[in-house]
Image 1 (cartoon, rainbow, N blue to C red):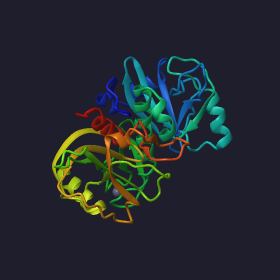
Image 2 (image 1 turned 45 degrees about the vertical axis):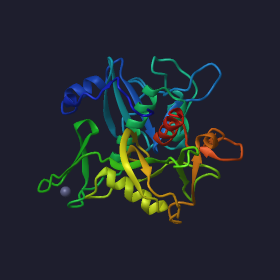
Image 3 (image 1 turned 180 degrees about the horizontal axis):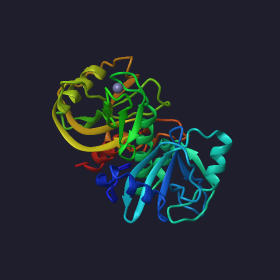
Length: 319
Ligand SMILES: [Zn+2]
């Protein structure tokens, strides 16, 4: 699953140790992931260099900006640094100083991770997603939600604390749970099984994906799945089963992937959320292109998404 990483040790025990963090920041092997206005630094595509994340080192890292300790990737201390204070020209100059993970130079640029992510290795994709998520949270948690005073960074960028001594409220990075579900139906007359996909009003022409929505307070995940499907397309479901999850830092969700079986098939879309929804057979889906293709016709979601994972899983489970 994209943006999911197993080799990074988040080293929570080091976050409170500012002396060790400073030592690691100046370490020869330290690699710093710059984030500029939520954009990630990646090697420009070329025939000779694989798409990959680009890093700063202690020799070329700016001295200001929110710093976040991401963890230890084998022996490599990994940090994020928000460099959004740089103007366009300065960001290009900084990109020119960056190196690959193993220290090689290559032309690079700040790019939207949604565009670059699917081409990166799982290790790079997850590091950039993690850095992007923490940079976003720090940037958007400047003031105390309890008293309105300024917040400051603690624990290597993983806690923000109110600067007013009477308050001292602590804020932690927030992740919004969202459910995403592949709804299927097997007709009783032995005709081919179907899956339900829809499209949002703002999506590129022809793109269809699984339905999704945010979990509300006081609601189980299974209930959220059934409610969202009912609200968006008026279809009733049963046998809601968890499949997999994916961090989705665009800007701060975790996608919780489910399968569900439809007990009704008539579709009535909520026009505010769904421009169109249809039942598709596996044979029909195999003719779909992919989000981002230039060609006309129907398209599946991007390959880095859990939506695509759920659809591909269903396609592969053909009887
Ligand atoms: Zn406060």
